[in-house]
Image (cartoon, rainbow, N blue to C red; front, side, top):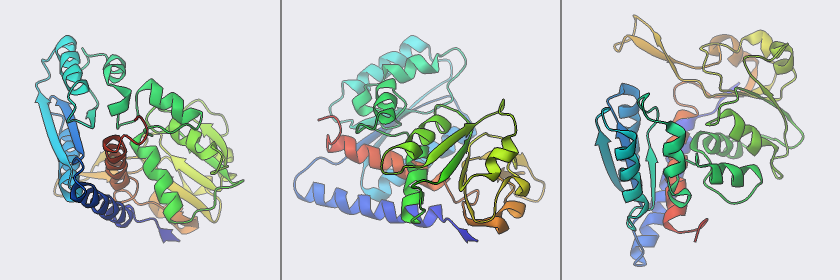
Length: 291
């Protein structure tokens, strides 16, 4: 069993991005600029946004944080998005989810100029990804693909089981795994799937993104499988300083001994998500996808 080290790989990717930014700026080009809109004071969201700002500093990006109280109206938020759409200095921006219940998240996502949608959630980017055209690929699926590539995981003709069908992870990662060049045979399972355990037992690669702590047990995994754990649920734990422990969708202790490769939680997929966001911002700054 070998651990897939997301921290190590994300460090390598950040170094590569930082080097490219240095070359762009040295040649008189524009420093890439990422903006983040955050609404309210959700602890997880605030930590994530702070990590994004730190990562921007590490690779030489400009970063702007626009923070609003959760009393902001949908109309006011749409107006702020329009300002960023029209600001030529902003290469890419994201609206941190979740949003307060009185705001329609889908309406917000669709209001973002798809050429600046570095989260890859806009229907145009999702559609382009699905038919294999250049696009901003959503960050977590892109991070998963980068880990598989850098650990030289064979995907051609392999059976990949994706557990979860969310628009953010499950659907896009299934699409990427079946694209030409990756060429996996993909089965998507979810909460209504019958015989889920039996299907998982057939998998060469399992991507668990169902949001249920320790859902994948040892009896669901065949010997030598590659397991990618996307889950990040805060589970109460009295032995930690914070009072909780970040727990994945895979029962790591029982599953890991059966795997050829497995991602830990934390330190696996998580660090790659921010890296993918940085890569998309770099592409946006270079006008490489949408000139």
